[in-house]
Image (cartoon, rainbow, N blue to C red):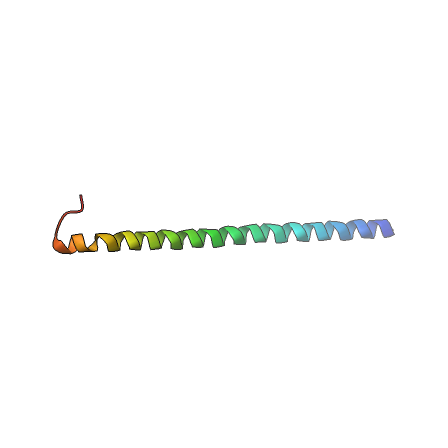
Length: 62
């Protein structure tokens, strides 16, 4: 009887660890995605700023 309680307890702990591990991986992916999106936004803004004087003159970009 005592052995069955320990096995049940161990299985519950293992399941909780698996759930927490899965949630941490999902959170990591969400943060990474957000950081990449912000970095791409900064690169796009910097690129647009460098072409702004050319556009203000009315010259074509191509």
